[in-house]
Length: 219
Image (tube, rainbow, N blue to C red; front, side):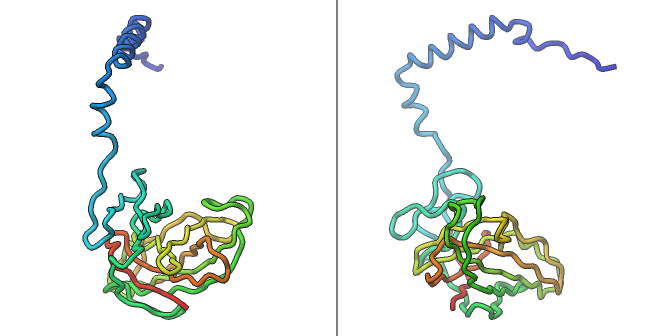
């Protein structure tokens, strides 16, 4: 038998609580200094990234303002910590299809691009948008499992202009991240970027824990 819980004071005194709430709201509306005192504290401030852009990017998923690209325009949502410009350090560079070391345990290969067109239900693009699809493969060459989630967000740039990442199940590019990779094992992730098929893109692979360092893959 379910044990009934006693009603809260506001449930017992519903009309009284409602009346008090209306009085409180009217008082706030009539206070001319209410907005002035609330504005300075609105929104969290962005934390600085050592060696990163002057406009510090917020952590992914916080919902704070997007960082700026070198020309001052907003960076595409979803690339909140991406290494867009010359303030980041390129640790290594290679061609698509070649292996590049990311750190002491991980190696990466980027294959592509594969030109495609988005289907009927893409995310962050309109149906019929031209995209370029790449496959990023990570291999754990170390002796311990590696949590590869921080490496799940490569970016693509044309020159120094970032291309918008696109997700589309019909292209085999869902919203997903790398798993933990066991020693000697590999895992692959398909990524797509909105770009004309003849645009030359460079793909930058980096960990979100160190966004001011990356490895670049080009044609």
